[in-house]
Every structure is written in structure tokens, then in C-alpha cells.
Length: 259
Image (tube, rainbow, N blue to C red; front, side, top):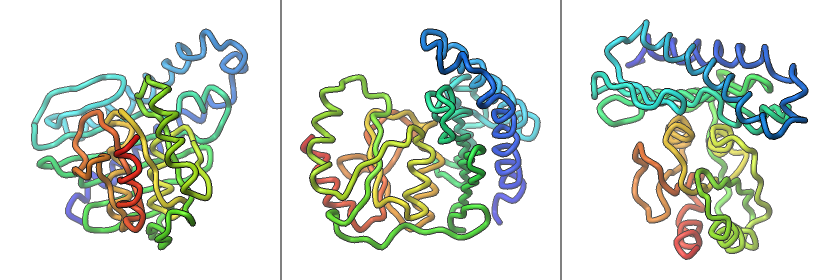
């Protein structure tokens, strides 16, 4: 493995952060009942996990750069960039829903080389290394072989999109073309499920890089395709994105371009 030590760190760290979150999951009823304070309360756990992850990475690779949802950009060696979402699916966590995840990715020379998405409540650890495939709990995974959109299950989320009318228009164009559309509430898991063949595609709008960086590598290494709605490759910036098994990518892109 080209990134042996970093690979061990990303696996160990995603599990450690996930275990820390599980010590608080479904322990505080007020997260469900007190909606007005739920976001603030969850931010406590976001920051807790973020602090743990950033601290461990800085211990192991003090010269590397980091980009995290909670800490922002921490400048270092521009050749190495860790991209982290310490708690992806905070709304699910607040509602005692098990579909949340820890997402960690590593870029080297502007290319994604390592990725981990860990869903601790359902004990699913997704890992990928550039050129070495994608895995779920140590078993190799791959995208589905479905080639017709009419036979496809799709996943979506609005990402950072604040225009609900745009979201509605997009769904209105896509939904009649597929078997069904689901929303999991965690972009990390939504991308991972495409990589594992549980859905044929996932589309999202105005999403931040920490939400999807790990998923970009997972889907690519699982044999799928990732692009923006115009077909351009993913970059570490907020954007509209389509993840697919590759077989339904072009037809999905045609629909999304018109929304």
C-alpha cells in the first residue's frame, strides 16, 4: 500500500471518533424534544469529534493541511490535505436515527488517495485507497450493474442548497424516471451506498467538500463515476454533484442539467 501509515490512521481514527459519538447517542432525550436547542447541543458533539480527529492527525502529521467542517482550513503543506466531517448527519443524531457517519479523506497533490466513512450505530466501515478498490467491513464492494434509470433506486439530498423551490424542481424532474428516491440524511452514507451497489445514483446540490470527499473516492474505487451536473470532475469546493454506477450517469446528467 502506497499510504500504509496514513491508511492505518484513517481507519483507526474513524472508529475512535465513531465510538466517542456512540457514548452520547440516544443518551439525551432533550435532543429530540427541545428542537430550539438541538442544533447547539449537537454542535457540542461535532466539535468533540472534530477536536479528537484534528488532534490525532496533527500528532501523526503535524506538517499536513486540514479542512474540516468545524475547524475550517488549517494551513500546512499544500501537497497534503485532510478533509473531515466529524459528524455527518447531525439531524439524524439528534433524532436518535442511526444513519450518521464520520467522514475522513486524504488528498495528496490534489488527488484523493484515502477515504473512510464510518457509521458507528450500524457498524459499517467503508474504506478506499486510490488504485486499491473500495471495501465495506473488509469485504470488496462495487457499484451496481443496473443500466436503466427506470430500474434504478436513487438517493438525494439538498446539501447546502437553501432554495427549496430549486430542490423541488430537481426532484420533480428526476422522481418520475426512477423506481424510487430516498434521502438518508448523511451524504457520507449516501455516497457509500452507491459505492456498495445499494443505489444506482446519488445527487446533491451546493454541497460542501467535507460532506463528500470520502465518498468521491469510494464511488470511484467502487467502479462508479462522480461529476458535477455539467460533467466536470469533483474539486474541493461547494458544488452540485452526481455520484453513480456510471451506467446511468449520462441520462441522470441530462435531467439534472435542466433542473
